[in-house]
Every structure is written in C-alpha cells, then in structure tokens.
Amino acid sequence: MTICFRTLLCLWVLSIAVTRCTIEKPTQYGTVPLLSLYYPLAADNWWVSRRVRVEGDTTGIDPVRFEIIRKEQISGWASYVGVWQPARDTSWLVLSSDELRVYSHSPTDSSSYHVVLKLPLVVGDTWAYQPSENDGLFAYVASRTESVVVPAGRFTGCLKVEVKESTGEVVLTCDFAPNVGMVHSRKAGPSGWDSELLEYHVAEESIDWP
Image (cartoon, rainbow, N blue to C red; front, side):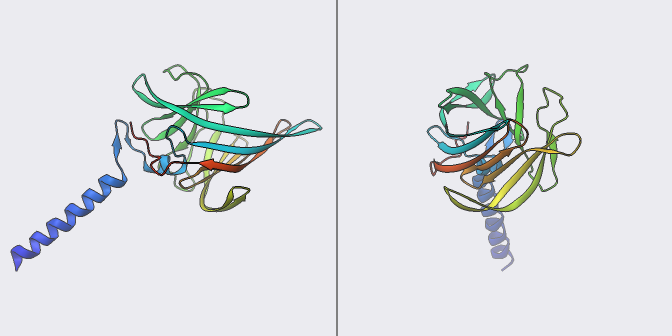
C-alpha cells in the first residue's frame, strides 16, 4: 500500500510539472506566458482600429491597421516586426526577460524603446515607461478585471495599463484583452486620440516562441 501510494504521489507531482512546463514554456529570457496572453505575437496577426484624433480644434477619424509581418533574431533578441498602415511606419516588438518592449527602429543596446508590459502584471505594479529616455513617465497596472466594449465586441478580464507623468497625471490608457491584444487606448493632451478595435485576426497558436 505504501509503495502504491508513493507511486501515485510521484505520478501526480510529475503531471503538475508537465502541465506547468506546457503553460510556461521557457524562452532564453525566462517565461513569458502573460506577455503573450495580453499581446499575442505571431506572424500574420493583425488588428484594425478606428482612431479619433484631436489636434487643437480639429478632429479627424482614421482607420489604423497593425500587422506582424515576420519574426527576426536581432542581437539575440526575439523580435517581431510590425507595420502600421496607412502610414507604413515600422515597429519592432521584443520579448525581453520580463517585459515586452516596442522599438521604433531596429533594436540595439542603444536604441530607444518603451516598455508596454512588464511581469508580473500585478495590480499596483509600476515601471519606467521609456527607461532609455529617463523622462519621468511610468506605467501602472490599474486593473486586470476590466470590461471593455468596442466595435469588435465585448471583452472581459481585460488588463488596464495607465501611463502617468511624475505629477500623477494620466497621459495614456491602454486596455488589453486576453488572447486578443490591445482593444482600446486613449492619449490625453492637445494632440490626443481615442482608439477602438474594429476587427482583428489572431491565430490560435499565437505564442510564437523563439
């Protein structure tokens, strides 16, 4: 009986270890399950949003499409190259040790970037939003239970991240839906905007591990 019990106990522990490895598949930088949950990264994923921009007394509405076109290894980093349409601007999304970085130029040690998400994503967590600029902006996890309604649908259990100045004023708010990505964002100020997700395509296997 004792041997049988020990055997079952070992099998139970082994099953937990296998399940954990499946959920938190490691990369060379550690584990990034939550980063890929809130911002699915894989080639051919795309998102189309409606951005209402305000410039002084002028208001305009623009459709904005962001598509991940390929994955690259740059300086040992897993980089996902995305293109914004219609401006054709390019961004590099990089999974680093515990954070998701966005670069406007090909990432190097000296490139400027901002940190979109940073583990462990616990409510109240803060981090430098643009650490390379040292401009005093910091991001803050405001909620992980937001309900957001946009033209693409109703999304629950959303992660809300706010970017604040050193004074505490919120200058940028982003809502991320699990297995979807960013569904809503708002930038404050005279050249601000409000962006809502219209439609999207995220492959079922969107954790494209390096």
